[in-house]
Image (tube, rainbow, N blue to C red; front, side, top):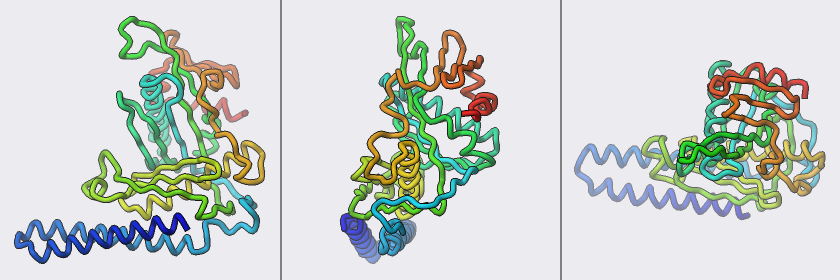
Length: 316
């Protein structure tokens, strides 16, 4: 199958790298360089082991469902949530706003003493983020954040605007549950795996081998990226878990019974007319259009002081 073939090719690549390094070790006389080579061999060996374990998991496909793409009984963990933020319309300013929202949720999590694990973080060309995914673990994490899903609109003067004109941009937020006892049939030949080198911080190993993972569910077009774990096998497991959560959420949102019926994403297209909330900087006001309520002091809200806002949305 395509997924298994890609993993096997990656395993052979790592084994080839191990063999090449071992040959270099035999010729090397410098003790320090030999130590570095040994560390690299150990790292690549762990990668091979993790991928071999992934193949074992794939042996029975990715779900235990009995029907085509069937979703059976499930339980949502109310104390865990996966939150994704992406720029919508507005170019660089949208990426900056997406970064502001992402930091707002991180700060709220810190104030709430939740555990935050950043799964994927891709920075924009001029700052902000192109995509950010984080998993929160803490009391009522999903319950409090689930209504943040949708299009967030900002009205402000961008830092790059010389004329002082107010721009309108958007960012999309998706909050996914972590589901247990869910059986969604995901066939391995419906998955496309891409492996690449992670960028940014993460230590030497991150940049030396292809540890980052991009997973595409071909029937629905859902794409998941994961690059924060040091080993590819761990990133694969996390990506597959997030994929199941996204497919489950979209099936529930659209009230369909199979993944093949999914046609639109949870957050829409990111257009301004789909907004659930507006952050109006000139008036220092945030308005949620669903509950028709407003809050002032945007700097404090972006610093994570959103308890009151989240509490009022629990009625949705």
